[in-house]
Length: 293
Image (cartoon, rainbow, N blue to C red; front, side):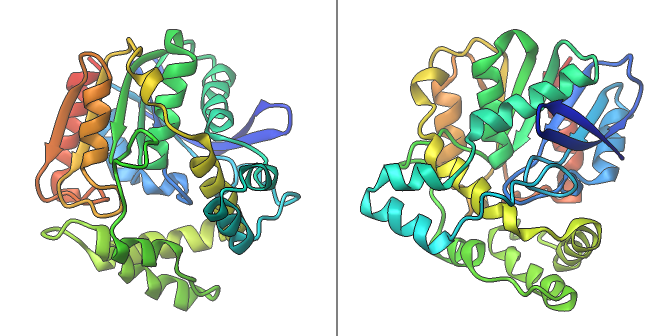
C-alpha cells in the first residue's frame, strides 16, 4: 500500500496488482468503503487476466486525506435538504462527486497513466460516471456497477436497507463487527455471507476506523444532482452491471443508466445484491475482461 498526492491538499492510499504493462483498470469504491471493498483475491484474479489493477481509498475514507476540519451534523444536513434549504445544505459539504472524480483522475496522472478503464461500484459508479463525463479522453471504458444516475426516481433504496444504511453503528470493535450482519438486508439472497461481511468489517476497522467522513461523502452524493442529461451525450464504451437482488440501489438504477448512455451494454446478474459474492466472481471478471479488451 502506498500514499500519493493527487492534488494540492489531497493524497490517496492505493494498491496495484499485476503487470504495469497491461491495460490499466481503476477500481473505485463506494460510500464509506475502503479499498478493501474490492477484495484482494478479486483484484488478483482480474490481474491474472492480463489487467493492471489499481484500487484506492476515496477521500474521507481509509488512509486517504480526511476533511475533518469540515464537520457535518447529519441531523442538520438532512433537515436542510428536507426543508429545501439548498444553500444551507451546500454550505455544510466541502466537496462534490466532481471533486472525487478529479481525485481518481489525479491518481492516474500521479501514476503516469494517461488513460484507463474505470470501474466503479455504488457511489464509486457515480464517481466513475463523473470521471467519464468530465474527462472522456482519459477513460478507455466505463463500467458502472450497482449504481444509478442521480435521478431520484431511479435506484431507490428500500426502507429496510435505508434503516441499516443510516442507522447508528457501534464505535467499539466488537460491536462494529457484529453490526455488519445487518448488511445482509441488501446482499445476495442466495450467496449472502455474514461471515464475509464481518471479516471485511474487522479488517476495515483495524486498518482505518475513521467514520467522520461518511457524512461528507453522503452530502457529496445528495448535492451533486442528476447526471441524466450528460449521460445521454456520453460516448465512452459503457458496461452497466446490476444485481437483481439489490435493495440498496434498486436495479432500476442500472437499467436507467444503460438506457441513457448510447450503446451501453446492460448485464443484470441473478443472485447478486449490493455485493459481489465470491460465487459470482467468474461472471463479473469475464464481463470486465471482455469489456476492457
